[in-house]
Length: 560
Ligand code: ATP
Ligand code: MG
Image 1 (tube, rainbow, N blue to C red):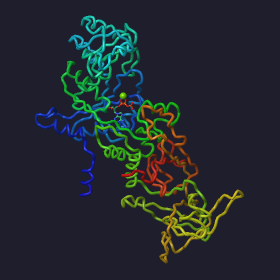
Image 2: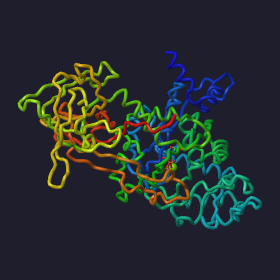
Image 3: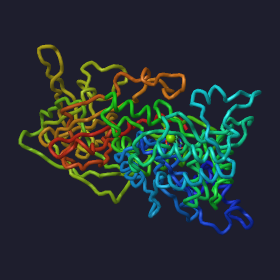
Image 4: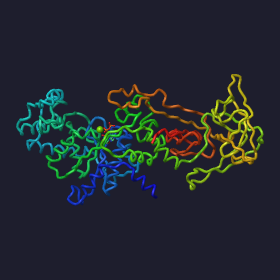
């Protein structure tokens, strides 16, 4: 108990919760209110581990304060959205263990409201139609010592109202004009230099069809979406910090009555991977990976297929904490979280990945026997399963050396090892083919060592795993390593495609798995003894044709 409390205390502080604690006090901004947050993914790709940080902050904050987190598809951008993504996003969030209840929204459902609010701004003299093209607008944005310029800024309100209506009616080409907020052409914050809030885009929208040919810009749309849903805390990543003055300007000037507050947190970066939907999509489209759910992908569906559990993913986010300072986290920390979870929960099994025959020459040819073995020594309630044993076994190729190197404690002529959970055997030699390759190892067992310990108490230092050749089932095993061999493929100055590692997938066929798990179910996790954690592949594995993914190796590469 004491240890548990101690662990909680060393968890990183969450500065957002400190702010909310203050706001909920008497006289605070949110006194007596229910906390409403939102997670606003753009449905143009699958969620990745970076999104999980935002998800855990949005849903976790609502959970902590007894509030609600809305799931809102941020589909104001008409060109790239897809129903496939909308459904996948929902599935991934549910898998993580979060639920939005009734609060599922589409930003595009507010297009009519947004249009009316924009008209309202024009009427108040707070917005105008500007006929500078995007290029001209860029040329006229000024610099630190010169203000931006627009010759259309002081055009009559009536004229802007007329042009805006005609923009909507489809009279103009893409880029011919924009609606701009009239704020401050000399602002030190360039986002406030009369930003465009509507642009013309003759594009089909996945839900609105061809109803619109003008679309609101993010900075205008987002605060309105938040106000429409009575969001109290709009939590987003740090790149929006410079946009907050504009968020507040929209909030204070459109005719809606709500008071959301934007708070920014650091974006999550992880080494040896890229966290950008655009880049991940390129990996899929170029066939570098088998799909968004390829087990090497940092997407939620990829991690899941790799064998990650919701608990491990959430624990990872918990350990890195919520801070305002950007940081890149080691991939090894994510792996450490998975290892901790699977160590406590995965079933222990024996599998031989690169099989070599081992024959126990003094064991009766027609005899077999069985051993009961624990499914998980750390969990007494996990039960046991039955191992079968005979004179014909498989061992791992590298567990035998005809001429051992110094310090080698496994099988070599004259040496004794323990066959895990079964008997002690002594190597007597080997059989080779015409090329000199070892095809079979020969040994004799000690009948008085059933269970693995010698009756006379002599010490045997090496223990190896094995599979009974008469009952073992065949399996394919996929070994993964990092997709990238550069620690920072996501860096702005790097071509991430040039950072790809040449062989991040190794497929082993004809591996031997102990018979007790011939019916392993998709996503079932195992610790293959001495090898690592593996899970049955959710797409390709079936009884009779088992396929396992290596989730993570046993070794802990993360230095605490
Ligand atoms: P991407 O560059 O991968 O497309 P995005 O920010 O454009 O990311 P959105 O779908 O707009 O993707 O993101 C939804 C939410 O997730 C946003 O609030 C965004 O701030 C947050 N988010 C995205 N990536 C990260 C990250 N690496 N760390 C923390 N939050 C993130
Ligand atoms: Mg985005």
